[in-house]
Image 1 (cartoon, rainbow, N blue to C red):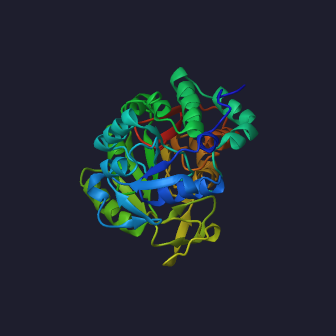
Image 2: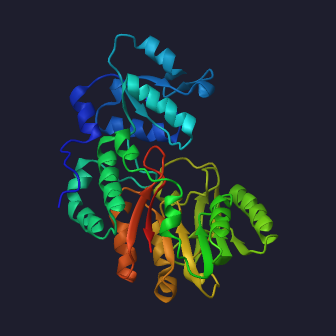
Image 3: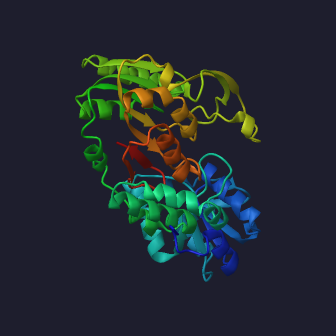
Length: 363
């Protein structure tokens, strides 16, 4: 079965038309997109870099003076340039601005992996068609199947329309999770405690929780959130650690956001490296686990393996982020069902660019 009918990916299209490119954004995403353009021999097509009005300032990025969108249009007047969006956001005002630019210019939101070095291009797609077809066949409703095909089409083409075509309302997941039984909630990648608070207050069956967060600044805010929830009667333990497949320690960069693991896989110059504990779901002392959320920055596969005994024993409902690595769209379903084949599998994407906030649900 072919999931997508596209025979050309975004990078091949840009190679074919060879038109000037304006980059919208100046962060890590832009660095990654520039790297891909360079690998395709397209870096010379970059003609301008612009940012949202509040982020322009007096600065340069990769040798380009950062300007506003209007300044970019003025500088490239008469040139039929293409805009590549190089950041992620779910904020309505930001998405509205992207949509406005898309109504005026040819615009793409390239898919580059949040973690790992495997690019989801046509070659990757064609090499893994059978795995994707198998994952698609395991999905349990039409919404999930439409989400899956749109998500693949988006990753190949960078077209925003495919993401908007598979959006679900934020509350749609509550319908999927409505029958969570009495038990504990494990929040892997708990961040500030936003999801911890949301799920505990939404589902009365969850009275106890363990929240795992590696990044120290986020962890401090998580503990404050947990203390607030404890005053409402919730029993919460906070764990400053990474989630993995085995107990131990790992080196992480303390200067790269949320405790990025993978210093051994990165060639980037790291300012500060620290050791941090690694825990598994199976090592967390809870009698009955009824729900687990996995959002662990590209380490979902390892974290699932570390939850093997819990999955076998308790068959918890699970929400697993599937957008960090290109291969997540098929490896995560395969992994869970290899442990327990008696799950129903769903997929949902909530409004966000690029294809973040996309998750599998195991019910």
